[in-house]
Amino acid sequence: MSGMINIITSAFTPVSLLTAFGATLIGIILGSIPGLNGGIGIAVMMPFTYGMPPMLGLLFLGGIYMGSGYGGAITAVLINCPGTSNAACTAMEGYPLAKQGRGKSS
Image 1: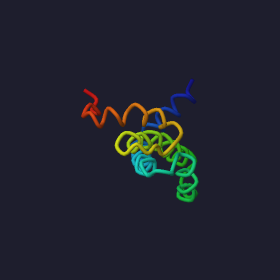
Image 2 (image 1 turned 135 degrees about the horizontal axis):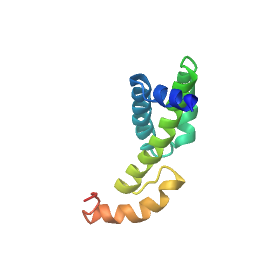
Image 3 (image 1 turned 120 degrees about the vertical axis):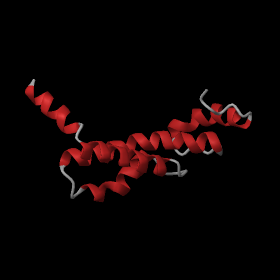
Image 4 (image 1 turned 90 degrees about the vertical axis):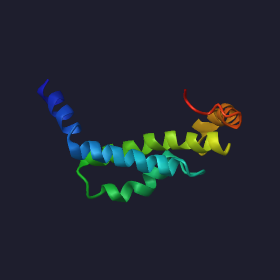
């Protein structure tokens, strides 16, 4: 039980949260470029993790992967060009809604 507490406390340090936030932002930017997906983003950003502690490196790569999934939906909705196969259905439904002006959330 004390091991789980140590993991949780180390995952919510300011450095870890900042790393996860920055990596997610990088992932959104990489994912919004058509043709780049999570796997390519991880491969491109992998050398930046070599000097990091293992926990921060995993947070960094996970943030890039998750952010790229969201970023792929941006181009799928706005310009009908899905960056990943995950965003293909989003492009089919989201682009016509955006053309009608109903692309916002509420």
